[in-house]
Image (tube, rainbow, N blue to C red; front, side):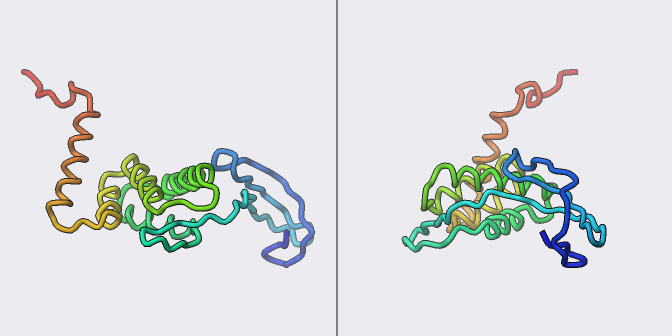
Length: 165
């Protein structure tokens, strides 16, 4: 590995650790020429995967594009970049293990929506409004009301019940 400072390829690994559930290896290296320490990552290189759009066009799956859409949905929300990276990693792992060569765009969209629903309701609604292309306000409100019903069903009944003096 070439040193980012001096450009020499004479280094040694001083520490290795697993990252993202063992699918990535993080290595700390030290250049033996200039003694600069730097970090590298090793990851599995998957075979190309194509996303099949609704009009049957095929587009190469791009992790960067998936990450960008999720980051946009989470903009100005209390969602850490680490949580977003974990969601992208989980989605990427799911599609690579579940599909050999092609994944339908609707499946990718559903995976993103399910993940965002767990992370942040507002990010979920933002993504859903673009992904589902709501035709009017009524469709948008119906989705928000569905989300509210799901939240009430998941909450502890004691939290919902009014307090008695």
